[in-house]
Structure formats: C-alpha cells, structure tokens
Image (cartoon, rainbow, N blue to C red; front, side, top):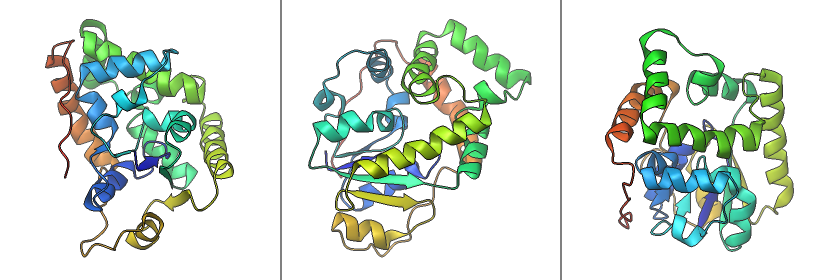
Length: 236
C-alpha cells in the first residue's frame, strides 16, 4: 500500500482515485470496488461490526485506497502500512454537508419520496446484497463516524471538522498532505515524488453525476449472486 486517502466521501475522492492511477499509483481501491462485489460488502460489514481484518487480503492487488469505507479506518490502515503516505481530501464543511445530503446520505437525511425511495426501500427489504450494503454503511460509516446522527446538521458538521483535525494532528507533513477540493497536480505530485502529468487534473463524480450513476450501480448489485467474488484488479 503506497497511498492512503483519509478524506471522507464527497471531498473529491473519486478525482483523487483517478489522479493516483494516472500517476502510476493504482489500482486504487474505492467504494465503487466495494459496491461491485457482494463479498467485499460482507467483508466490510464484518469489519465494521468488530471482526479482525486481514488488511493485505482486503486490498490484495491494490496499491492505493481512497473513500469510504476504508477511510473510516485510517488509524488502523496507517498503523498496518507505516510506509504509506496519506492524502486528506477536504472541502468547505457547509458545501460538504449539502453534497452528502443530496447523495450518500440522501435516504437517511432527506429521502426524495416517490418511486425512487419506494424502490430503494423495497430493494433493501428483498435483496440480500442491498440489505448487506446498507448494513455495511451503517456499521462502517453512519454509526462509526456519526453515531447515526447524520440528519443532525450541526453534529455532522462538527464530526467532519473534528475528523480532519484528528488526522492532521496525527501525522507530520512529511507523511500527510491536506488536499483541498479543487487543488491541482503540483502539491500532490511534489508530495508523492511524481512528475506533473500533461493532462488536466481529474474532476469527477459531481452530485449530479453521482445521482445519475447510483441507480445503475444498485441495479447491478441487486442482480449479482450473493456469494459473488471479485477478481484482483489489473496493474496499470
């Protein structure tokens, strides 16, 4: 493991994933990899509930990791991989909360109602994979980080700010880069010792893009066998 992304979801983690892969530090493990694998979902659900993880097995074939659920375990990962560098993606707390309210936390903060919410609740009831995913998120993120109080805006904002401070206080600048949303290549490449690419820095997975993609991701997850196993990623 070469790079650990400690930033919460909706702080530019997908863009960082693409950037790390362009810098030759991939494959990069991300929530998308978890959602594509019923085995990984159940693996993280067990970890969130207190099972002792084999981190080398969890991240077999990967050279970097960003986003939830892994970022919620930054203490454990940085202890397991003491040579890995950390990147803490950040953004304005108010815009972060608005983003998670419209995306990752939508069904627990502000359900849109209508057919979309009805289908979500039905799938959570009848699909073992979807139910396991919701349970995994509850164990690894909602309860672990937010005490289940994501709808309490002031509490969630306080958690977000305290989280960043705890990560920043835990590591020297040689090991940790605080990387604000919208930052470009220069600081990241200097920190990682990589040349600046000729292409623009990736800017991916806006709230609108997330909402367009999530239906297809859930549909694929529901159709996968509950015992589905992921293949190891290819080196790029």
